Amino acid sequence: MKLPAFLTEWPYGEIVVTGHRIGLYHVIFYHNLGQSAAMLHEQFPTLSVELLQDILAFYDSQRVEVDAYMKRCQEESDRQRATGKHLDLAELKRRWEERQRTNVG
Image (cartoon, rainbow, N blue to C red; front, side):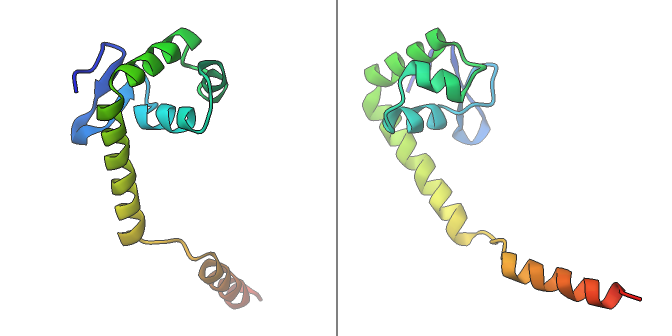
């Protein structure tokens, strides 16, 4: 997919808004939940409404490619979530309480 100047592909394939760390994935994710450019501006105030309109127009013109990109991003996120380490709050609380007991007195 050929990207316009307002989008940049980072190493490993992530596409971000040029000059920002905000990903195309996130803008389109919230747009697909029903957010307009003005609503997205509230979510991402460093992006102008005009820039968000340009991003959404790009999405409309490249929907198949952007949807495929969105799917790849979601699949990678799911893969990382399934294979990564998870924070066990109950275990952390147990360790903290144990440490508190052993450090008393």
